[in-house]
Every structure is written in structure tokens, then in C-alpha cells.
Length: 79
Image (cartoon, rainbow, N blue to C red):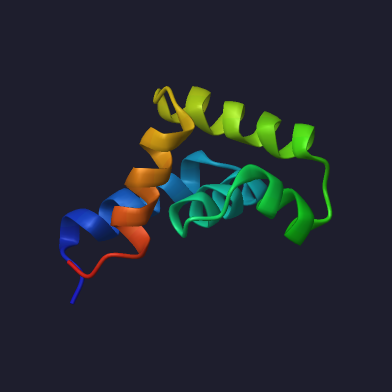
């Protein structure tokens, strides 16, 4: 069962990020690389990198590895 804190964080992320940013955020958390995501979503690597930059700006987090780790904890680890 999810804790209330995790539910609240998820809701905040979903309301803060665009749909595409949120998808990229979750894919990073699942362990996909930027080139993997670009291939899967049929977008250029540069487009995905722009989403990654936007995610960092919106969340105030620097470093792709940092928010990939956060996404992994919020969506893929059992609390």
C-alpha cells in the first residue's frame, strides 16, 4: 500500500510536469537511457534531452541521474 506522502508527491509531479515530461521522467526512473527513450517515442535524442532539461528546471533538480533515482523510488520501488 502506498503511503500518503508518496501519493501526494506523485500528484504534485503529475500536475507540475507536462504529459511528455512526465512520461520521460517515469521512463528514466525505469532505467531507460535518453537514446532508448528517443527510439521508443520516435523522437530525436535532442528532443528528449530538452524534456530532461525542462524536467530539471520545473522540479529544481540538477542532473538526470538525480531525478531518474527519484522517479525510480516513487514509481518502481515497493514502499
